[in-house]
Image 1: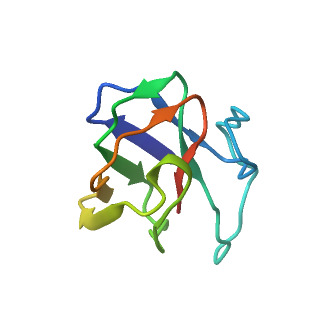
Image 2: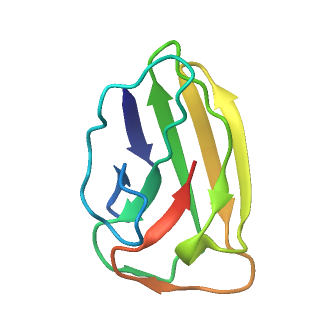
Image 3: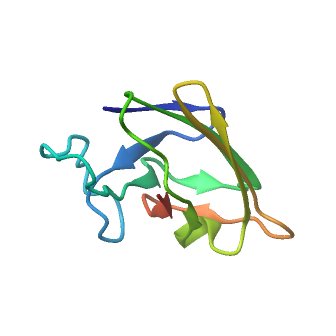
Length: 109
């Protein structure tokens, strides 16, 4: 079970279909121990003048955060993931540019 808390003015969601864009797949099929599940953070509305984002991802015990890769709108941004109780906090700073986005992939983990 994954949960998402957003500290930004944008509307965002987790998408479990890793194709480019938001396929609105919000639930995963059952997995077994050791499976790796890749998710994306997507914007569900147009984003303008984005200079960074901070998200908290919460998950059940038995789920472990394995990594972070800035893609799409956040390509080249500086990610700062850090463990927090029950999940991970990821702050991402876009250095020197702003972007316009409509429902595109922001990152995957």
